[in-house]
Image (tube, rainbow, N blue to C red; front, side, top):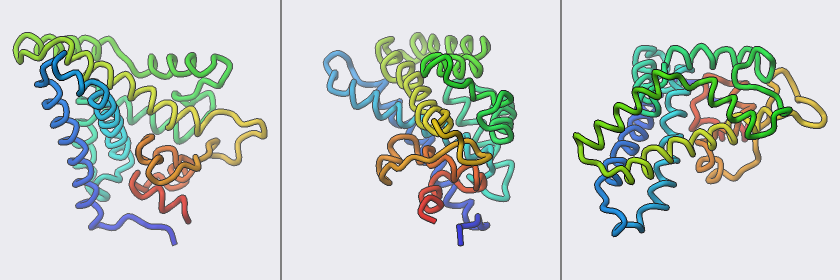
Length: 237
């Protein structure tokens, strides 16, 4: 029998979500205080780690929309999700929730805000996907924070670009490729069922590193009440 969320799961879910949030903040503070170019050794690993943690912020917000961070505690889910998307890129939790509900209701159909077919190619689909969620309010907000961090906190511009801007952008590619494009792109034989998606066959470790098991996508659509860290169990079942 597949796992069903129980009341005690809110403890583990909250702990995992808080770990992601604290890890993102801690890594960012650490990298902001590195002196470049003397500490150039931190550039590549710093970008990789921050990209992975940015992706974790979004996956945390995504799970909050499904109420899987703290099952039965909707206010906690909403609060954590709101914090996560604000830290990610000043997203509106309310707008993301509305779009994500449409995605689950009409996966890979015209009404799906995440789907544009393949006629525009990977990068065309990605750009339309990205522009659908970006607002001028977000850009203004991030510009303000950028300047505050630079002029008031004294964070060097190069550190801001390398460890704040670049990883955020790279994580959108990671989320799109593993969480939308690969699962929902059209197959020669058509989609297998009403979910119009498939799951990957990655190893447990690569599934986690690629996108927090979000590539186990058919199971997510079939069991949307299942937290991301439970998806591999669903895949085995």
